[in-house]
Length: 351
Ligand code: PMP
Image (tube, rainbow, N blue to C red; front, side, top):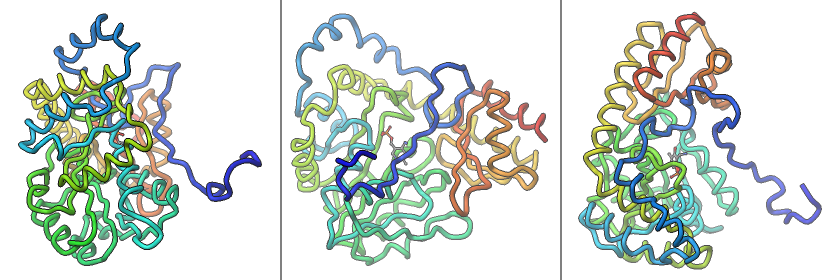
């Protein structure tokens, strides 16, 4: 740390992303990317002509993409904001709807960026424990008079709550924003986008990084009432109005238009997930009932760190979180069925 850094950031714990190895080829099951490429329409759209247009700024209002997303979800473009990954959208949400008076609440075990944003913006954060079995208890979030953020399905557990339970939370906090992070919803969760038409305090956040195979393009979005989206736009325009680059805008639009291609990929991923979890259970693992594109598993004879290290030695990267309650687990992204067969074979060898 230099002597110039503002003291308010001196204790800030940075978010640590999963490893992105650049020099050795691993079977990469550690950051929940899709094993399948973007759709052929996306690949074709990123052509020389578009690359040459990079001398021009991107559309600061992201009009075509917002219209495409709005039509897809049956809302208006004014109900959609797009950002540089859903991480950026989440950052705007923490920045916009929390302050020293109004704190934020999220589950104790969830996406690791939530506490980082809370600390970055100097917020009072309440981490609400998940139940013993890692399920989220909606009751714990009812009428708590804070901004609320949770992932549904949750990460790294993969467990989801129903739209009815989300609605209970939203209804019981009419004066606070509830942001539902649906990064993994396309793999088996139920989306709450339609509830945004009824509740002006609900924001649904989604991403192109997982089900739409565009993690490297950095594209996320939120859907909500005109007012909430206008608030987020105010911050976006005060931070970086060209936050989504030209190529990503095109890729995103084409991806939304290739719905059936991604739908099939998600179905394949869900099938591979359930089959792999079954194989792991047969080997003595306990796995949560994941609705996401990852498996959250623990074994009675191998600790989380042993699993992580043993698999790494065998050329397979998974995610281990050195965190109370979950340090004996690993999170395994669902890859192709061949990759998952290699994973199961490696684990058999270790056992
Ligand atoms: N939310 C959750 C729950 C996630 O796991 C991730 C992926 N790390 C994100 C949001 C952010 O994804 P992205 O910024 O790639 O859209």
